[in-house]
Amino acid sequence: MIQLIRGFKDILPDETPTWQHIEKTATALFQAFGFSEIRLPIVEKAELFQRSIGENTDIVEKEMYTFPGSKAELITLRPEATASVVRSYIQQKLYAKEPVQKLYTIGPMFRRERPQKGRYRQFYQINAEVFGIASPYIDAQLIFMLWSLFERLKIGGLSVQLNSLGCPACRPAFKGALSSLLASKTDDLCSDCVRRLDKNPLRVLDCKVPACQEAIREAPSMIDFLCDDCTGHFDAVKSALHSQKIPFALNPRLVRGLDYYTRTAFEIQTDALGAQNAIAGGGRYDMLVKMLDGPDQPAIGFAIGLDRLAALMMQTAPEKELTPELFIAALGEETRDITFEWSCALALEGVRTEIDFSGKSLKALMKRANRIGAAHVLIVGGAEIESGAVVVRNMATKEQKTIPIDGVVNHIKTYLAT
Ligand code: HAM
Image (cartoon, rainbow, N blue to C red; front, side, top):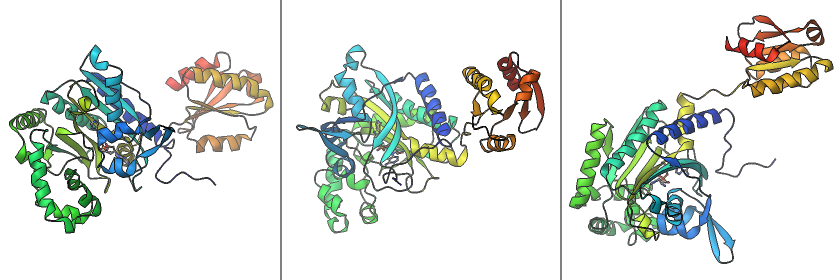
């Protein structure tokens, strides 16, 4: 038997109603906050991710699925969507029509990470990105929107972790202080961290290796190095979150695994999923549009891990799997043509209908109707057709009702509605 590739998974019919419910709830909410959908390719030039996520990140160094698209060009299965949305904002000149763009996109991402519970090599994200707004109110509004989504989905046990990563004016001093501390602890750091120490000391802060975690216990906090502008921005974000009653915790270790962030960085974490506890993450990336040769426009966004969110909901409030409203038990060859017609007409009327063409006995058909959770069974034999009426049975109450064949589709609709 050919099996799934390790780290990939099937999302089965008992899970998809929960996924659809999340997607529908998110879409309606995001649209109410002014977002429009954008759909983008799942492959891009490798260079897009190298330049935006950063050469010295785990994603770019180890986790990208990159292969030759042509002799001259490497292409990559997208490990995240932000870079692609920025690429499109620039390439399609969305900014020329209107610099402020609020865009969301839902789809699969690919990272060659070590698979474990909650961590997959193909996973799904719901992304929301805002371009052209520098105001801290939008930072708070995005977090508010995200929090509201989780409230609407009735998910508890969540916390908002918040940090500021500063800007090119104030971050170098922080990096310097961090580097000097780490330089005295190189013996304790993992080989990745030692290698990245010079170029990207911030990455040590989110290294999961316990020895590195221990080494950074006394690391300085970016918040103590923020310039006046960044401090003002951060204070305004916090105050707007307070006014909207969003509980949050300051987390000076939150640096996020991608290099493009400036100022506000946040994560929503859950206590119910074990080690993979980040269910959404995001932040500002005010430099990225310009860095990718676009106009100088600020931006901010987040991505929700759909697999993790769905897993949470499956634990607490799964959506019911779809089951037939009506199962047509057609008995005997002579009932086949007419019941076939009815089944098509009923489905077009929106009645979730299942018909069994196997010609099995009534007992076998009732058994199958039960197994697939049909709410009602329409029993149609030759004798019923001759008599001009069929029997419909409510599988829960066992009540039966006779329905005239003349106008049967409408009769069934009325019966199911009452
Ligand atoms: P990220 O933190 O890398 O951020 O991913 C966002 C979320 O995707 C995570 O919080 C997690 O729920 C989910 N996720 C990430 N990797 C995996 C995996 N291997 N398996 C399952 N779920 C996973 C970003 O991707 C940024 N682009 C977010 C962003 C948007 N920042 C600004 N705009």
